Image 1 (spheres, rainbow, N blue to C red):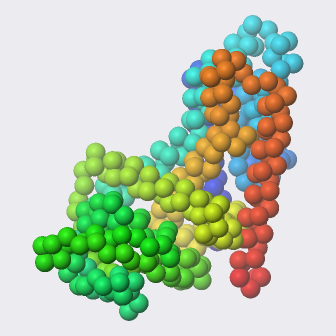
Image 2: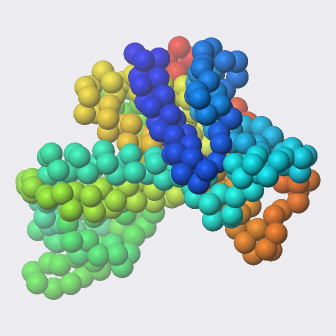
Image 3: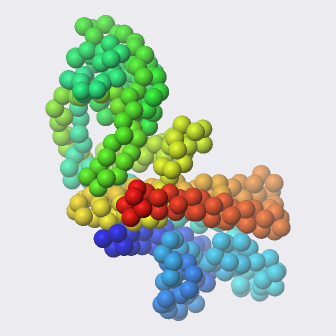
Length: 364
C-alpha cells in the first residue's frame, strides 16, 4: 500500500507540476528538449513530433522540463550553446525570452499545485458544505488549560492575541501549532468582555496508525456544529482560505524548527510520505484525495523557497535581474546552484534519516 499510495500521490502531482511549466513554455514558443517524470536512468520514453523526449526515469522523487538553452535539468543556461545558436534556435530558447515570460514559466509549476489544492478543497466544500460551530465553550476536556486558567462553560471566545474569532474553527489555527505558548484570550461572559492569559497545553496525539504529533490544546469543546451548504463561488473562496491556512501552518512550523521550538525530527521525507500515502489510501478515496491536496500545497510551498535549483531560486535570480537590469553572471549562478543542490541534498539526508528512525521496522 505504501508504494501504491506513494506513486498515486506523487506521480500525478509531479506530472501536473511539470506540465504547468511545459504548457506555459509552449504558450510562449519555448521548445522543450525533455519532459521527465523522475530522475536518473530512463526506464521508458518516446520522442514527439516537436522533438521533446518524454521519459519516465528510475528515481520517482520529482521531475523536470529541460527547455532549449538549458545546460542541465536544473535549467542553468548553457552560455556557449546560446551564443552559437541560430536566430531560429534563439527564438525558441528559454533563456532568450523576456524576463516576465521566463518568470511566468517558472512560476507555472507551483501555481499548478496551488490550483490543484484549491480545486480539491472547493470540490469538497461544494459537495459537503462547511461546518459552523458557535465559539462559545460548551464543555471542557478532562485536561483543560482554559479551565485551569479560569474560563467557564458558556464563555464566548471573541479574540486570541487580538485576532478576532467569529467561529469555533477560528480558534484552532491560533492554538494547534503553539503548544506551551501563553496567549491572551478575550471572551465574553454575562455580556461583559474579559481578557485572560492562558498557556496552551501540550498534547502528544497518536492516530490509528501509530503516527504521533505534538499539538497545542486549550481543552475546550463547542456545541453541536451544523453543516451549511455553500455555492460555487463561496466554495472556491473558502478553498483559498483553507489553502492559505495550510501555508501559514507550514511557515509557522519551519520557523519553530529554526528557533528550536520544534525538533528537526518532525521533518519528514519521501519514506514518510509513502507511509502516510498508503495509510490514507486504506481509509478510502476521500481521505486519500484530501491527503493529495495537502501534499500538493506542500510541493508548491517547497518549490517556491528561494533556494537555487528550486523554482523559487530561479525567481530570486529573475528578481535580481529586474533590479540590476542584467542577468546574474554565469559563474555566480553556477556556484549558487551548486550550493542550492548541496542544501537540498543535505535536507534529503536529514529527512530520510528521520523517516528511517520513525519507521516501525526500526522501532519508531
